[in-house]
Image (cartoon, rainbow, N blue to C red; front, side, top):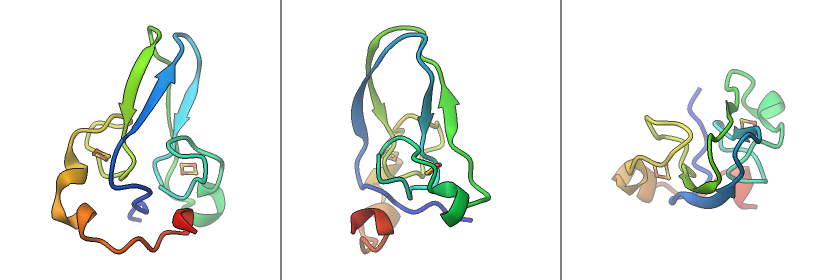
Amino acid sequence: MEPCIAAKHPFRVDVKSGQRYSWCACGYSKKQPFCDGSHKALAPKISPFRFIPEQDGTLLLCGCKHTSNAPYCDGTHKQDFVQKVPLTCPCYS
Ligand code: FES
Ligand code: FES
């Protein structure tokens, strides 16, 4: 199952060391870039990517959901298959 492209850009987020985060891998969450549980109904084969930062800081987390280095943006969103797709995901409504 392909993830929904939640955004055509990364999300810049401040994170705390030792805190647990769940990055939305399916794209359907309305709390981007984090999971809100929507994958259970809309993308049951996709699970969130859970991570715990080792230090406080600002991260660029992938919004297009097509990164090869989850949960981080790796620049894939610059490609045409992301930039030229119509914005039809439920997360845009
Ligand atoms: Fe997308 Fe949970 S809502 S992974
Ligand atoms: Fe997904 Fe950059 S936002 S790779």
